[in-house]
Image (cartoon, rainbow, N blue to C red; front, top):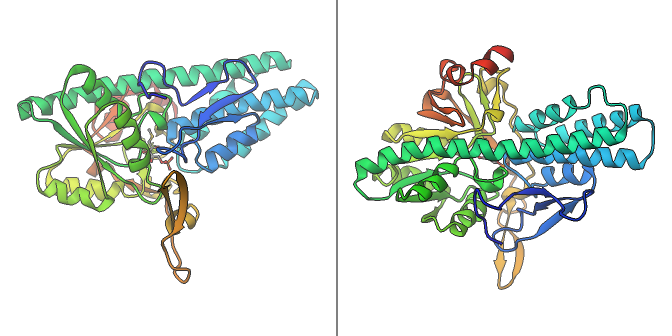
Length: 377
Ligand code: MRU
């Protein structure tokens, strides 16, 4: 398998020979195994999101969308009345919405799918509409990521010009790459466009404990695409910044408030603090689907997911040709596992969106998205 952003690669798709099966990549097995998993029911989709076979805010939303299409197929098989079939899909939506709390794309994707159920009177129409909407959500996500890439690449080009041919050193955290979206990624999209344009770059990849999305997913993606990168431990970023080895930080976000606060993978805040202290620009790349226009105060209003202790107490890796999991924390020690943190807007140099780059502030976001800012207060 090759990961070719913008060409053929997708992270979720309808089985080419079976419209009753949605396929995903089991991201828990990367980088050691590339395994495709079939989803046949909405419950399969819910498990895939909860257990993180798929992850990353846009892909979570898209998986929920496709899962509602599967729910409609299940409802038709049960051959109940059209009203009861719609009811079934609505209850599947609630199951899916409860899987992961922080990424706002989950609720956004579900609401978009439920909106097409208005006035549905037969199951074939319901299924056709849900399939079409899930496809549209995925196609739009690809276009949005490409837009983020175009705008972000201009920032990289400006730094490259100052560096006179030396590579631009970018630090990223977690995986806000193709694997977190449908294609291109958000934080990685500018890197892929930079490569297209011949802008020399090098990426510092935070390993991103506890699940290691950086070392296991971002590094895999960049290697597939031939982009120069180096994996570093999570605590190394500040040191590299102090020594002038980082020109720009670009991360993703799972939920952005209308005032520009961002929730992203745990540890993002510490990188923003270090960047601030060292005068390194700290940008956050986001599709507008990640903006929660109903909230302003990220620390107060963004729900932070707490995940299981085993993500902290255990690590997995390749032992010979076998993937093994080993325990690294003593039984007697309790652990805590907050999966996200909030970086206040004041620490964010700018937001890279599909409509351009703006200040991380209510004015900045409203300037780019006046339609949304006015509608969803
Ligand atoms: O827990 P995860 O792996 O879903 O967390 C993912 C992140 O934090 C990403 O940075 C975020 O979803 C942005 S994805 C384009």
